[in-house]
Image 1 (cartoon, rainbow, N blue to C red):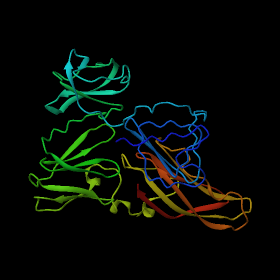
Image 2: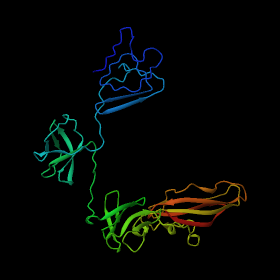
Image 3: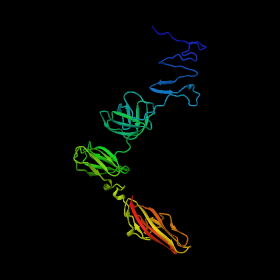
Image 4: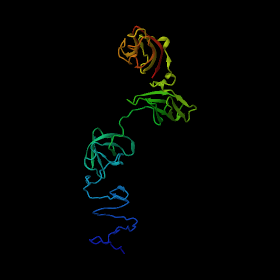
Length: 358
């Protein structure tokens, strides 16, 4: 026998939870809920057309009136992942027609379509969607030949493809050294370095056979290839493979004092790396109105004139002033550089000159 309906009176008598004392109802499942006024609850969950919204609060009133400035509407359709497979027919080079189900007309414009043969989903092509009806979509470009299925996505999953030419099962991982991506070989006979800027690749034979490595890691200086069938743990020094950042050995400061002099032009011999230079200079004057200071210059000209540092020393000082100053500056790859001394009734004497490759 059906349960009896609870019908409140117009004056509010008979309401569920009537009065200020809660009636300790447990849970209620309602197919339709029509309410006016105020809904009070410690936790209120609304389930509507596969969209669940939970509102949690403590002692606050939630007024569902529509006059809250936000308006009332059905939640917008939004899905960042690609759609499920949609079967259909490639009715022309640019049009795909689905065999069942429907889309919302023009809702796919600006999204992307992956067309492929349903039995071989690994091979296909992503193209932008320019128009769609409820049963067909149109793309810019040419759909995959004999396509029998599509998937749609609001963004383009594949931006650029770069052929590596190393065969199937070629790699088992990748390592980024801060400049290049290194593809860890599995069946590939080569360790492959990738330039992220353009996808260009350089190969290096590792000589450890097939299935040689399991993974790789970068320790901040070297890349380590972890062996699988290889008899060797392999360390790769990226600096030896064209990576710009130097190794610890190259980062040692080199004392160039014996081969350097103030006022002489020198050249950074590195084609892609800068030099950091630190020098100390003793500046002294013998007349109060005298001066003695130094400044570094660096540019691509035969005699550099672009200031690479500020002036340091004694521009106008006291009689018999005598101090040591430090000059620090950076020289770009292939550029010329020098430290120039300027004096009047004074002297500038080089103390120490060191350089390091960056």
